[in-house]
Amino acid sequence: MVSDPCDMLYEDPKEMTVKAWSDYVAMLASDLTHNPQCQRLAILLKGSREILADLKQREQKRAKAA
Image (tube, rainbow, N blue to C red; front, side):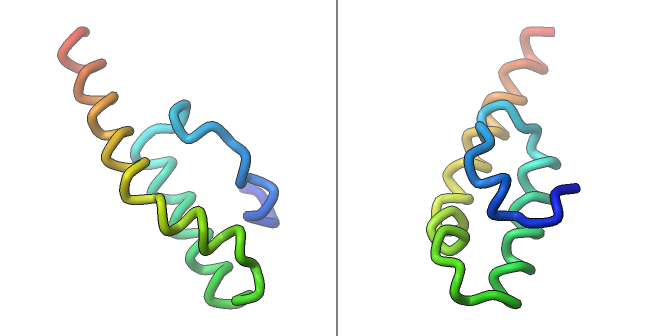
């Protein structure tokens, strides 16, 4: 696990699984609670629902193709 969630902000969410993204968002939310000055986290969390929906759709397509 990354010690500073800000270090992960530029990971490509399209390459993550739904569980990995959910864990990632939970980690960011926890850090945001403890560090409200980190505006980058707030911006990323705002878009997390759209990314999670996209990841779920991609996983479903992969499962159907398999």
